[in-house]
Amino acid sequence: MRLRLAQAADWPVVCELRLSVLENRLNNPASVTQAMYDEYIARIGRGWVAEIEGRIEGFCIVRDDGYVWALFVRPGFEGRGLARALMAECVGWLVGLGVSRAELETGAGTRAERFYRRAGWREVERNGADITFHLDLPTEA
Image (tube, rainbow, N blue to C red):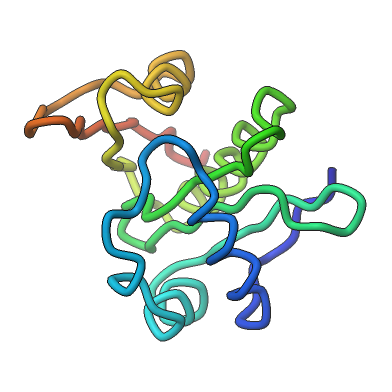
């Protein structure tokens, strides 16, 4: 596995991967645009992709205020440590910025919910089928 910063040119593969997931499916694919993606990875946040044999199999995008906008792994590549490695990149970047808390939302009863709980995220709110999680971040010494 190789991690690298996401680039604008990754959009077609990131979009295809996002639409391939089996849980936390995007209800309206048109609601996420390349312009939004470009803004998140270059102006108000950062993104990373995980490649296996040169192909993007996972990605994570986080805003500089601590909100994790996306963390997805292609079906068939779950359980290989991609999500854990991508989350570590996001959290490390946020810690470097001095952000004290990360936040995200995911669907209840999903693999993602179990992943975040195991990683130490704590549930702070439920809104229908969605759960909001927080993760308190360490401060750099």
